[in-house]
Length: 302
Ligand code: NAP
Image (cartoon, rainbow, N blue to C red):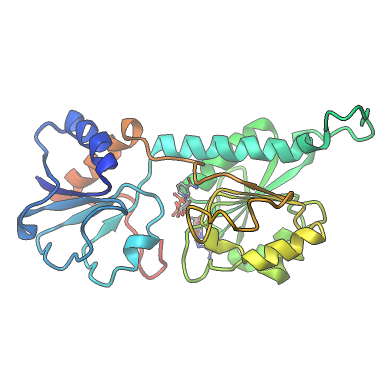
């Protein structure tokens, strides 16, 4: 199997040894005659911009879960698989649970200013519902961890497909679900349908004092509507890991807003140590004509 690697130079240093450790026979290259390759391992930041000459490629395996930057390339005709990695899912679950606990326990309410604020004891997790918007690989992982803490978890996905232990709703039920979402975790891909899904009208449906944690993609929330919503407490706070422009420009109002916590797209990373096995297995499946896992549905955009 001859594989073309197209990602940033730093990714090559990290991934090449991990891939070769799993498949020592993999003929892995950073350049060469496009027609000679059987597969491509891809992440944004590499040199391939035109997929047309890769006429014999049977699979492009993305190193990223989010594929909006490759799927919008008009020259892409080859099958594309997105990244599913247990380490990525664990990292995202930890990120979401950590920030949800900050919201749940009201950690920001205890300034060291000499004031004895014992008027409000936080409810138990069992008394609070957390909503997860986007119940794919990452949403399900976050739901399992939050459910383990004791939260009652409600999920929204495109289809509303059943997930054991979770009260699931399709996209058409989103408005109704928002009204009960004291903590709203967003783990959606960037698609034409998800862009600005949380607009001024929908943010206004949140209960006063709600928190939003967005670790999916920055296009989900209308930035201006969010700034406006924060003025009225809907939401009261937003923890944002993803943005329309990354890195977030230094003069962006999100940096200094007291109702916004910015994290620099660090919620979850694909780790070669946990992800290389799945990527290699997928390439082997494609080479032997077996069904490939995690294929992207281009009509849906994820
Ligand atoms: P996934 O397995 O493809 O799941 C996507 C989920 O979103 C599915 O539940 C899908 O519904 C749902 N969905 C899609 N469009 C929707 C819509 N219009 N309305 C409601 N639900 C919709 O993806 P994943 O692996 O969980 O990853 C999710 C996203 O996280 C990625 O696309 C990426 O953008 C982001 N991400 C962020 C980081 C970070 O560090 N911040 C790291 C990795 C990934 P169905 O189940 O019905 O198909």
